[in-house]
Amino acid sequence: MRAKKDPAFCAYLMRIGNGQEKTNSCNKIEIPNNFVIPFTEEIESLNLLFNVTYPNFHTFYSNPSFITSHIILTIKNDFVDEINDMLIHKSPNDATVYTAIDETIKLNDQCQFEDFLHTLHPANLPPYRLILKKICPIILLRNLNPTEGLCNGTRLICHDFKSHFINATISSGDFTNKHINKT
Image (cartoon, rainbow, N blue to C red; front, side, top):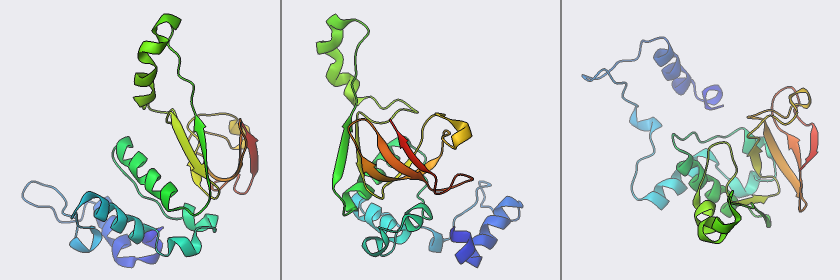
């Protein structure tokens, strides 16, 4: 990705990996300023991060390799949700919304806890409201059919949406460009 196009960044990563990068008095590696997007205000900084990661987004959005060859890594799922929302919002296509059905074990508790269940974001499960658009990248969260390339972590590009399935293409790995119609 970036290392292929930025020899200074590649050399920096190699020095870190080889234990050769200088550390400060707390034995921490300091990230050079030219690798850091300064924080000013949350929305402004997120927009800057987005624009640096996806330059000319509206020009290249319809090219799936452009979308999948750029990535923003975060340390918390809350940040992922915020960045995903930004990507979806900036995408020019019409949105399709999938809504989960949350149920309590005891039917008597359903009306009392339904709204609460909608606010939970358990790991390895999609959100209560999943908003997708064509050419949108998604990552599979569970092993559906490993022999067909549908494993936890598989990256796909959305093409079409029906009420109970997503039409997509695998965008990386041994099954790249394989067409998928799954519920």
